[in-house]
Length: 384
Image (cartoon, rainbow, N blue to C red; front, side, top):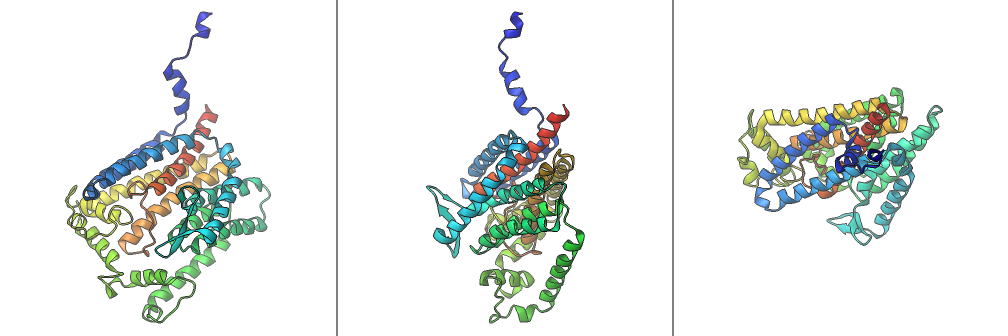
């Protein structure tokens, strides 16, 4: 009988915390984190403190991931309305009392300076997943209209700051939820075709549309310049086109196998701008070449496939929508960053997950992965 009252060992008390963690997802995260640390050590070598700070950011993100993974999806659903409401109120406060830096009003001082738009990257899909969970089994066209309004309000406030990059990420996270909730292809295809047609017209009419005296009205001047620079960066090779041109030179100069770890000339001679943040992919490609680039892409694909698998196997509609949105969010981050550095998308200031330097973006990534791990964990525990 005495054995019944034996005090459990530390291992017995700690084991339940880790029980149910998805091994394949954890493996993908560790691989990409290792790639990020290795890349930052090389490209941030001349910056002195960047590698140490990047390591601390990763440790912080890992802690956030671990904590969020302990929260069951049902508890996450209860946070949806409060997080969304607080996020929208903070965005309104930014519009009224925000801190302006370099022409953008994106921050507010609430004791500490924060950027509320970062909160919406998680709060937006959380809110929409909550909404569709409540309407499960009785979805009507009006429900998608309400979801569109819920998405449009914060997106418009972020675009007004102006912050096109974050606006696109928030829209992507929200549209992913709406898509997975069952939006008809009849409503998806026409806007896609119209957008594709607009891109073709823009390319054909580039000389007229990009003339200095043309005002696009719907975009700020710097945003118009980014689009026009993408279409023809050679028009201003030492100015607005410098980033794209140097990024493409670095990617091409890496060849098949790359110049080697810490051997990138474009990188260490400082031809690549923002080489530890937005343009770190160019530095990575220069040092590790096509083989390294394909390996990095394979790591992201593995993570995305695993995330979508977790979404398909999730036990509730809310969990499926959240897992799908978080996974596609990471995909959009990676695709947009690689695309803008490669010269196929405008430069919008989107970091490359795991690789780019940045505390806020790393913590946001930790939250997304924590949500995925929480959903995977809840399913595995239910099965056991």
